[in-house]
Structure formats: structure tokens, C-alpha cells
Length: 238
Image 1 (tube, one colour):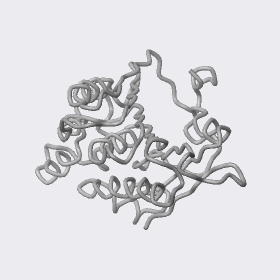
Image 2 (tube, rainbow, N blue to C red):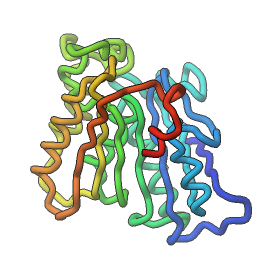
Image 3 (cartoon, rainbow, N blue to C red):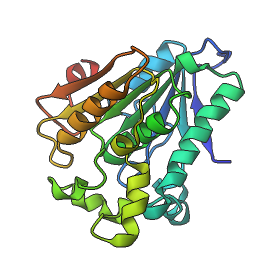
Image 4 (cartoon, rainbow, N blue to C red):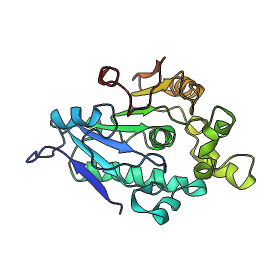
């Protein structure tokens, strides 16, 4: 098993009707923890005030549990991070803390976005909706654009032969099939200096073409990007 925090109002009874937010990380640059406004976007406070539950799993590949835990889920071991996230979703469902229709997967940042997108493709049956913000979705070429190359020590790069197969295996766009997917919102920013919007354009187009469920898969393009710690509340709420 993996450690996981559950945040909710004191005394709230968790049932299949409880709306749940499953946060996803997977990078040394974005540590998670039980903070009130964890995402910087007022998302956690909104869920808590709406009688929802926020789940924070400490999956392998994150820095929260130390260097050993982090190294268990990087490079050619990245699938383990995906497995842990899917296991966290399964646990919430099996315990009756929420239901598939009420479970939202949310990943923020280059690797957090990749995590939820990869799990969306691998296990579309687990989630009621998916939100990915500014993620890396083209794993074969990501390091060729902007400053995304800095994630090579976590993901690997295709110029190295030993990295090619593991990257291909978890690339969400290249592993998508025609099936029924839950609805999704993919968000990109035109001025993000790390992750080019092309990742989100490509994945959105692929998933729209593959969607067999008639549920919306949409993209939002923000024209202005600002670090979440500096973003005004009005922009976060919007």
C-alpha cells in the first residue's frame, strides 16, 4: 500500500454520493501535502466547503517520502507511479468513500498532468472526470521544446535507447484507443516557459477522435501564465 491523506470536514460521512478529488503529482518539483489551498487555485477549499473529500496519495516518484521513494517511480519505473495513482482511486471506490461518477482526477504541472492523462488512457473506467493542467503529453519529443528538457532526469529521453520503450509505453497520446472515456478538461498556457501548449493540442485532438462515449473532451488555452504562488485570486477562481 501507499500512504494517502484524506481531507474533509470534521464529522462528514463519506458515502458513494460524496464528491471526491484525487490529486496527482509525480515530480520532485511539485511536492504535495495536506494544505488548505494546495493547488494554489482555490480548488481544495472549494471541495472541502462543498462537503467533498480531497485525497492526496503519496505515489512513488514523488519527493514527499524521501529519495528512495522518489527513485522508485522515475525514468523506466514511471509506470509504478501510474499504478499507485490507480490503486488510490480503486481504494476510494472499494471503501465506499465515493463512486466512479463522483470521482475527479486532477493533475497539475508537467508530470502531474502526465500522470492523470496516462491513467485516464489506461483506466478510463476508474474516473468520472479528468482535469490535466499544463502537462507533458508527448513523451517522445517533449525535451525538444522550451525548457522541458529539465525533466529528462525524471522521465528519460528517447535519444537514449534504454528510455525509448518505457516512454512509449506510458505516452498517453500514442496509447489511446477508441473506447468510452470519461469527460475531460485539458488546460494549457501560451506563455508557460516550461511546457509548450502543443502537448495539450495534440492530446486533446487525439482523445476527441478516439472518444466513443459522446462525453466532452475540451481544451482551455490561457493567454497569460503566472506562477500559482503569484496568481491573483480572481484568475484562480476563473
